[in-house]
Image 1 (spheres, protein in one colour):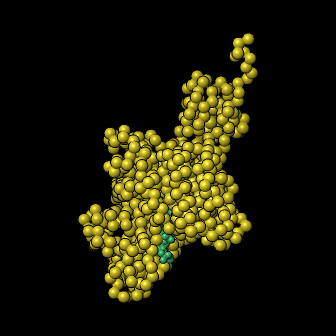
Image 2 (image 1 turned 45 degrees about the horizontal axis):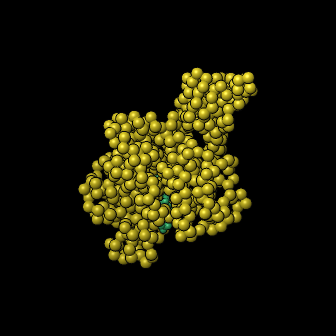
Length: 583
Ligand SMILES: NC(=O)C1=CN([C@@H]2O[C@H](COP(=O)(O)OP(=O)(O)OC[C@H]3O[C@@H](n4cnc5c(N)ncnc54)[C@H](OP(=O)(O)O)[C@@H]3O)[C@@H](O)[C@H]2O)C=CC1
Ligand SMILES: CC(=O)C(=O)O
Ligand SMILES: [Mg+2]
């Protein structure tokens, strides 16, 4: 007997069926279902995307509250990742507020109540010494991670491991906006204790019930983690997010790893991107602007430092640029002589010219400084009240008013308040989205100054250029390229940021800028991209992007084009032969 004739039926596919990818996608035709071994496990109809989307949108509409919609979307991603991303990319404007700010803020506050399934990795203080080993439990090859210690989640304070919603949400945007394939993303939350006593004492809290470790301990932990991450995935891009004090890690790792801090650098870049357009629209030359910042934390200082860079490029000296800023923190105007020890990051902008005058109020400061720009990164919802906004309107034809704190409840004002109190003249961007507004017969649309316009392109640019580090020039390039990404209509309508519905196109432009800057700085390791024209580079970027619409058809093509012996190694990692699939 030949060896072949002794064989019984071919073995079933070794690949485990998974609900997390497209295995149970109702778009899969019968031959693919048979190949996957899912034939008979789903209702018989083969549905195109429109029908599936209709069902999803109806289900979503049935959920009465944003948090229930959030939960449904978590479920959808967990059960059919490609359908989730199809839905998200087709409805980015409507769904982003549900998976990201503002709803993700509520989700983080209530994470310990609503958590149902693993979506990322948690690494605890007690795991130190074993971090590299634990990373082996992650089942995919990772290209990019977003990591937080949960100590400053949006403007909601220390939420400990509840902060996981942020890495999950940001990475979903990496996939939706820049086409980084879902399994290449790792949401990572560090469980290093929390100073949020209410959470620590809540029986449902899922992190270590200890106070936050000291800064030295956190550094020790991060040193081990960073080494472990690059040992496991040598080309990994690492995004730090929502740390209460992000500066030490940024300083320590930015020249050693391919990393950036989104709150300091990404926020700085996205605001400069919109600010360049706002300065143009204001009609006031760069040299004549003056800015008051409410909030002198990581985001505030990150934004101001990059605006300084912009002013310098516009011909203003660094000293003059620096002196265009007045910062207010929880202790009032940030000055060198106010009697407290200033945190290091505040010193650069601290005023030395207040001549002993005491800070009294924001409105008095506005009268004194006569600013053209008012930025809010303070976490104080409603701080830009009617009086403040009207003062800005009196001083300027087109006041630049950016209430950037998240989520919406922490926004220093909303769009309607800004429009009504400035006679519709303000140049406005907020961190969380606000609806358009009809004013004097004109439909006004607010800008969204949120780092989601740049971090996807920064990450994709770093991945594709195989950057060794993420340089400041790469960050700044993301701002400049973002500012040029508006189409004619958006420019004509006076928008500061492009329509979010075009975010994938915008991310291609931002990514190109980031790659070009990496090449100029010599930190790229993909020499072939250097010879590409801009058009060729854009085509390459687009081709590299995960497209949730083509997943099922790619799989089907691989299966049916194989003459029954397909060995497909696509993003689903399948390498079974059709022969083995009981067809
Ligand atoms: N739109 C976007 O893309 C982004 C928005 N953000 C948002 O910006 C906000 C701040 O983030 P971040 O800078 O990282 O946070 P930080 O905690 O580092 O900074 C908050 C700042 O606000 C100051 N502050 C607190 N209370 C008051 C008050 N009553 N009056 C004046 N200032 C006050 C704090 O003062 P003190 O220093 O004295 O404590 C601190 O300087 C958050 O809401 C965050 O969501 C952040 C990143 C991106
Ligand atoms: C958007 C963001 O990164 C923040 O609010 O922290
Ligand atoms: Mg953040």
